[in-house]
Image (cartoon, rainbow, N blue to C red):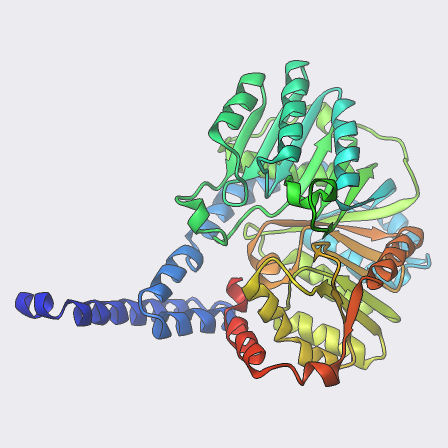
Amino acid sequence: MIDFISNNWLISLLILNYLLAIGTAFFVIRNNGNPVSTLSYVLGLLLFPFVGLLVYLFFGQEYRKDKMFKRQGVFNHKIIKKWEKKLLVDEESLEKYEESFLEQYSAVVGLVQNTQRKPLTFGNDVRLLNNGDEKFEALFDALRKAQRFIHLEYYIFGQGEIGRQLLDLLCERAQEGVAVKVIYDYVGSQLASRDKKRLEEAGVEIYPFMPVWFPNLTRKLNYRDHRKLCVIDGSIGFVGGINVSDEYVNSLNDSFWRDIHLRLEGNVVKSLHAHFLLNWNFVTGSKEISIAEDYFPKVKDCGEIAMQIVASGPDSDSPHIMRALFTAINQARESILITTPYFIPNEPMLVALKTAAARGVDIQLMCPRDGDSWAAKYATHSYFRDILASGIRIFHYCKGMLHAKTMLIDGQLCSVGTSNFDYRSFEINFEINALIYNEDFTQKMQQHFEKDKQDCEEVLLELWLERPLKEKIKESFSRLWAPLL
């Protein structure tokens, strides 16, 4: 046997690979997971020797998810529900809401409130921040005015010019006595050890989210903290698609990056803050998180906007963001406008959109012509023929990279946040979105959508069907891996 192995080492390795691959494939099937994802893994294991096993090793195992359930679920029950219970809308207020012009969206409100205990909050003000320049100007201004604490959570905390400016400001505020806490995703960020040391020496508490070995080789490792949020003094919040990186700031680049962020004031900030504190507890490994009274201060009405925060991740028992958007799509009567850098929908969302289109709802999808991911681009394109045939209009954004993650319903309800319209955002990563129930704000968002269409080319079905065969082949193979992208 030893002689055979030494003389036929390649064949021996292949035999070992397929023994492991068949056993792993059986284990994947036995888990009764998402059928599309399961099939993708099984095909990878059987068709790509060695590579398939490595992909499953890095992306497919669920031990991290099990660990999160144990560590986060208890604290969600003890702490977060305690604070958000104070904000839950009583029946009388909800009845008044249901009698308003947004009555048709009470199903979305009820879903989020009943399944995730995320309250509908009133008296909020929302400021739309277009692109990185506006976002960082507003963020830095708020950071300079912070009196008690600054809490940040980012998927990408880069080392470029904008990252240096933020680092300098955080160090300055911490040295002035403001309590600063930072969570950064270990895979998505490129925070140097010297920068982390400088922050810590200035008094900033900073922790990575789920450190992994060789992060540069595992850019898509499962269960990443994809959120981009900041809470200042419990009264001002920021959330949206813009990370801390120079590529998001157009004044620092020759290329153009289209994105959207929000500046929030009012009770909605409490709900946003609760999610930060929950993740802070997770990354620090604390047995009991210490919540100061000023973390949830009483605030006066700042405006007339009703809002909810909806979050999802592998620590929850259902894909809350996906279910909220799914319900909103089913409630739409006139229009659905979607912007997303990656359109890789799961089957329920695809059916919901096609069904809405069949009802006569005007559905328009905007995504980048040239994205930042080759595989995601072709996976997105693989859905175009089907949805174009269903009557959904598609617009390719040509001015640069479109990274905004928004959905507008009937000019009355909009979602803005970190969640892409893909399987990874719906099922795997930690995401957070703001649901805004306000006609004036949604109309403003719709005006920006129409303005962005001026930088788009509409994708027409008859021309799309004539694209080269090699493009179609790339799309078909990319779609096989869609749940992993």
